[in-house]
Length: 302
Image 1 (cartoon, rainbow, N blue to C red):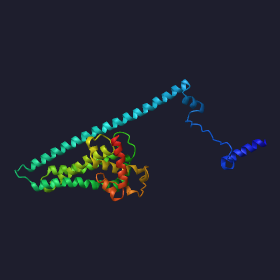
Image 2: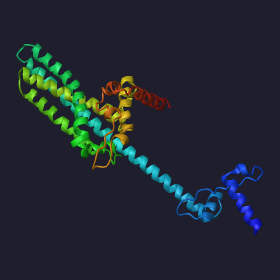
Image 3: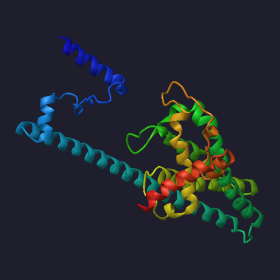
Image 4: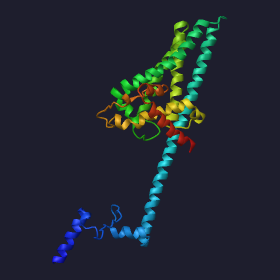
């Protein structure tokens, strides 16, 4: 009995202070592999060793079910991309065709009297460029002040895993299309300098919307292939800047619909798209942007 007590005391003392007994044998606890849930220890040993015909068959069935689930998810993802691609092509072709017809019709009406309205056409062209550029600043303000505030219930679908080819956030495309259609219609049905300016503004909003769809939805979020657009260096920077925002969303916002929590990191920048790299540079996020560009460049090369 004394021997047993001495042995236990020696082992306990060595375990907590091995320096007291330098010549004592080391006691190493043998670790057993972690046993998965819903599986007994003996059954897991048979599965790991390849023994037990019924258990091996069951393991094969589990692997087949897992592979089938992965294949089903990939097929569903492919169908979603194809569906959105068809929608993007149809909408782009339709909008481009209607815009081209509208421009030709308006210019033909302007030149019907044999005079070339230089001032009106210059105003239309200037407002087209101005509206396209101005939409970037409007989108930046709306993203910060509206989409991530009072309209978060709609916009949060853009920051969650998407179920299907579309999301509730796509409604903003229709909302932005309404003023463009109204301006083009007013400019098309009326003659004069002011209608010409409205016509140009509507065209500018339309051009920005199409560019936003291809860069944001296609290049950034890869909802459909964009072809050579992905090779443009500046657009790669735009995509990387947008991903700096996405990679930090867990820190910026609570994804529950009840609340939105802000942090001080970059103040949620960038909120715009095409000037996103400039926004990040202004708030000291250039280093983070370069890291994201390098990470994405490795993905392009591989």
